Image (tube, rainbow, N blue to C red; front, side, top):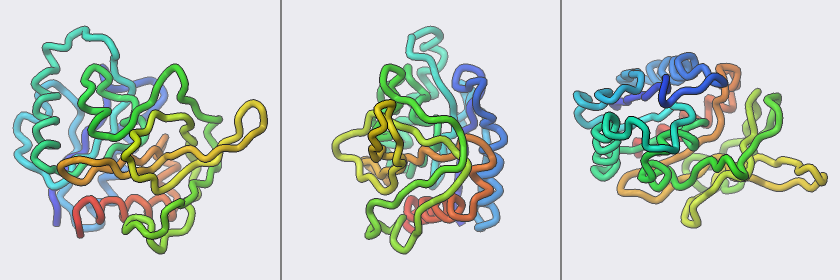
Length: 223
């Protein structure tokens, strides 16, 4: 049994397009069913003050500010989060995690990529397929492509050393179809993985999406 902390987006790190509470609950239910000790906590400046050292930190937060307003009030939170990463705590960023904590550049460096408002986008939410491109990694070895009602993120800024596992095939305005990384492992002191799926609870209703999440967690925990 692993100790898992799920951080839920709200207010400063929330947005009107995502029900982070509902999707975090879906993740927590799945992980508890697998026997893990899961704590779900909304993000506040003191949210990490008393967590000790979890085995896995799951970040399911929304669009965060790029400016420095109220930065002093949140500096301690970001320092504690960064300290957990430096200590080798495994990290899983879900969906909007690529667009959160924009006031702390250490987060994008941890995640191995980010959403860029100038170039990143997605087609309308709907039935989507996410294609495995590395069938040898422990997360994807033996995993079929993932089908879910979800968003297909496109043109994320992805670090050169990120290890891409799944892509979304998305057609541009000119009709050309390109493969866009949506799940990758990032370099770090501990294991770090970003998974762009999870817009709402319909994503977690998909058996193949749940299988992907379970594999991700198993790898992150080295189980």
